[in-house]
Image 1 (tube, protein in one colour):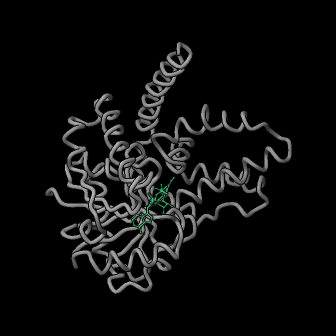
Image 2 (cartoon, rainbow, N blue to C red):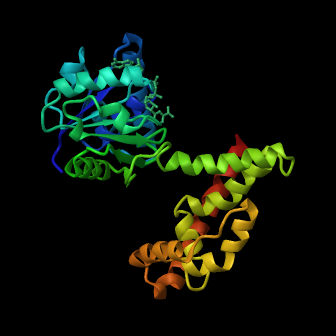
Length: 312
Ligand SMILES: NC(=O)c1ccc[n+]([C@@H]2O[C@H](COP(=O)([O-])OP(=O)(O)OC[C@H]3O[C@@H](n4cnc5c(N)ncnc54)[C@H](O)[C@@H]3O)[C@@H](O)[C@H]2O)c1
């Protein structure tokens, strides 16, 4: 993709990290931040984050990337000529709605517009916009320059072409875009995190575990695999015939824990079909070896980090 201009509106914690994401990929980044002290903070933070990346070999030329980030005096100046506008203002509907109206009125007709909102629904954010068909949510995980996931959530009226353009842009700058196919509270990441937190608190509340033991269950157990594959791939590799086989073997056990119905045969077949489209059954054993090779390297990395923490 050719170098293009990205406009950021709001240059706080998330805005400055987005600036790093787009600038390190070679794009010009024009930022409008309303509060003067925040502008100086943004410039310092962007430079520092880029130098940290350079020190680890994750960016080639931190100084050159920092120069691609330009602060503007007005919102209009930032969005003029932009191919994509990312809104990162305060998480309040009554602030974001007028801010998005201003962006929509000033941005070039062909620009896509996305909000970094953590929890506001795209329909509530964009119902009133003239250009609502080019709007969607692109929810990052803090800090986006280190955590690549970005959840794309269109409103019911968003053009499929706008979603595809933002998906392609995010992939091109090294992020990992996923699609929320229909808007839902919490999108995907926070719904998964919420389910886990809910159970973690319950275990502590009812005295089954202490906080540090729940944390160790994730840091030294579940999280090791989760750093390179998700829960579906995990269970696909944990039964000889794959995901549906796992569901048939253990579905009753999980259902019993929560007093719910086991996953239906139909649901297991749907998930199985999606997994098999990515990995044929005959490749499961080789994928298990791949998982183990990744785990070996991860264990090695964690041991080295633990050692250096102790030496500090
Ligand atoms: N912090 C997180 O962990 C996180 C993670 C994912 C998404 N988000 C979302 O990203 C957005 C920004 O969050 P943040 O953590 O960076 O907050 P923040 O308070 O650090 O940044 C918001 C910035 O917007 C500026 N601002 C306010 N009104 C403005 C206006 N009219 N024009 C331009 N700038 C304006 C503020 O001065 C501030 O610097 C929120 O919607 C938040 O929900 C945050």
